[in-house]
Image (cartoon, rainbow, N blue to C red; front, side):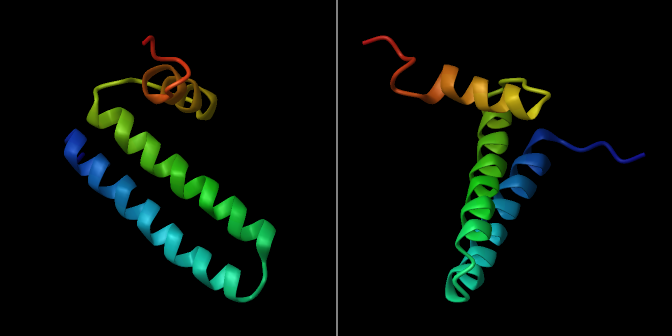
Length: 80
């Protein structure tokens, strides 16, 4: 079994995010607005997953990733 380093996961997820943004361009060109929005959401989701790993923040579910992003990176949740 192959052991993956966090850097491998980060690189993969950011790459997947960029790849997904490229897909969005085709959906927009063809006026598939709902699909474009869905794919943009997932591009952000992939990037956020990588960001959390990069900062050693653990989240194991879809909802957990959203929650941890808000907790650690949202300006509303950060104290002034």
